[in-house]
Length: 497
Picture 1 (spheres, rainbow, N blue to C red):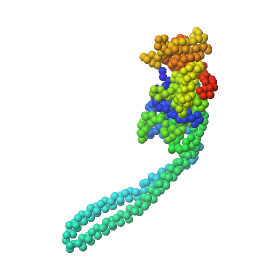
Picture 2: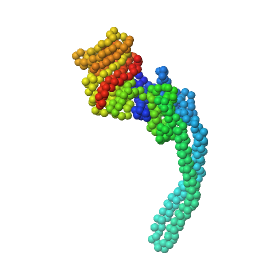
Picture 3: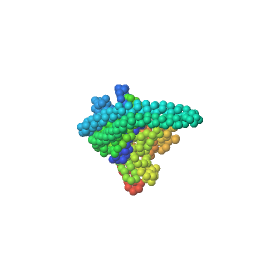
């Protein structure tokens, strides 16, 4: 049974830099939440095209909730039962909004009237007529000119032919004068109307910007750290419609209702528009939503920093997160930080606990040497599937990676590498491990093969159908600081005890 946060099921990451910790915060779009979105599509009518979104969230008690949102208005309404409401603050500018919308509507009507004044059609018709008359007259004058050229051999007709040429010129000038007398007054009226249109459009833009600025100052969003900011505080440039997209609505609602976001998806439905295709999933819009995601996701990070200085960082890695990026580019600890860090060691994806990350190559080399020389003291806690007879002892079983059965490790006295683990029973099925070596899956295999009981949640060496997390946690770590020589002794709380 795959977790809904299985990295292999992630199709997109909503991400942003936390303004407080400067770490990268991420929220996935998964195949599971896409399936939820497709169910919603089946219940939507083929109305005007717009973006819709769904957010899979979880309450403190573990109950899952599915939130849904639409961008802008739905059938002319901002509040629709069953959908998350708009971001609060609009009510504070309702009077100004109504006044501005009335002005904008009046401007729109004026623009329509000015674009449809009868002079435009009259000008177009007369311009076409005079153009045709001039073309016909030019053809006639050209024919006459050819005839005169043939007749000029007769000197007696020279004066008469010159007069004919003058009359043709006068006729053409008179037609142009007549054209101008009709078209110029119409053109002046049209130019005046166009100037009015230009001024009205400028006024419309100014009114829209003023209203947007007021709305953005009034709109207030809250993140998962409990912080509230206006949109104008978060963004320096705010395109029209900022704050009315699905993602901000969904995340604000979840944050203000004590819901933890698990996965989110946004899609287009209705009439196609530009590059938007019905039923297609899209990421955060670059201009409106992306700049806010760092703030909106603040407080969602499950990465606890236990210790840090100029040379290293020690984090409490959550279960389900890789230490380094996998073959398919899955999310990992390193991706959660905006600075380049070097992992000194690794924890299995399903194991939680203390992980050391170096900030420079010199610290990395010094710490790596301590691991190689087994100078790092580590203590893990675990819950076994059943009680064991011995209260404490050691497990000395060599492990070998069978190339025909990866990623499993197997006990093999011929090809295996030496592996030593000390254990101590804390209570019932709760056990404390102190590994001397650090082989892949060492504690998991030593528990299963050495103690005769797999660790709870171990789907590789225990119950493959289990739906619990792996109950293995790197609780304590002690090492020598690579620069100062100080002894660093750190501990964390076991999350499943």
